[in-house]
Image 1 (cartoon, one colour):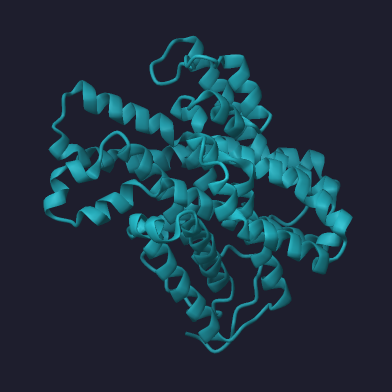
Image 2: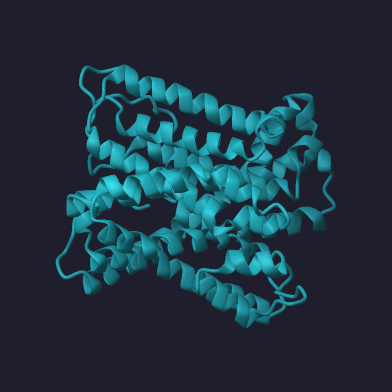
Length: 384
């Protein structure tokens, strides 16, 4: 395990990248699985149905894992640059968020709008009470989650932006709250109350299923959990190796229960199982941050880590691949028993599209924007 614990440094963290990779993979499998269910293929004769369901139906939970990771990474990077959240630089914080989020977001909205105007199937905004201009405003104004809650689901390419709306509204207010509170002992209890409110905020929205899933407060509770984790990692930069290992085991067990025993947990805990989810994700994040120096348990999983490094680009673009694959699958009249075979081209195509977007759009645009918006060139931080 290694003798010395690892300080949380500037380098990419293999464990966190792996968790991000697992999360984005579950999102992609979920969106394919809604259309080609693994449990209806002949794989059900080879693997337990519980496993196939776990692969297909944990996309929503995976987004909440993303929220926790996002809160941890963005806060950790802000702490490294400023020393404390009381000294956070608003210009730097917002410039970094804008340069990371805006290029891909604007391009996606532009492409989706063109596809709508061309009448391409799967991309036309046509539900009663919805329109293209209003969808554009909702996406760029970070309230697409609210818009869907009030009017119904948008086409899949737009729908993925609900989580981005929650994240960016949180990060618009977060640095301001940090500057106003000025003290961690004031900020931390506020974050803790928000973090543990998750079951109750979801339960209070039970009369609107879409809004219950996509409301601001539940998602922000998960982000606040990650922020608290970053504060803990700053307060205790090192821990004993067995403490990190125990956190890793606890987090893995918790995620297993959520993903494989979701129905049972719902009967026992109702919305409380979401708190188990975010707490387990935090345990894994902290275990990775505090892992001993030189420990490399992730050998052989570099492919999954690469998914984690491309998670933002894959998340925004994977529905193009999903819709395309499903259209071809249906046009060929394929037997559902062999439906699992269509996952084989879909997954690498999602990765390749995400990689192309990162290489051609995300990184160049981010570098140019930061060079123009930041007064002094800064050391690249781990993207969140």
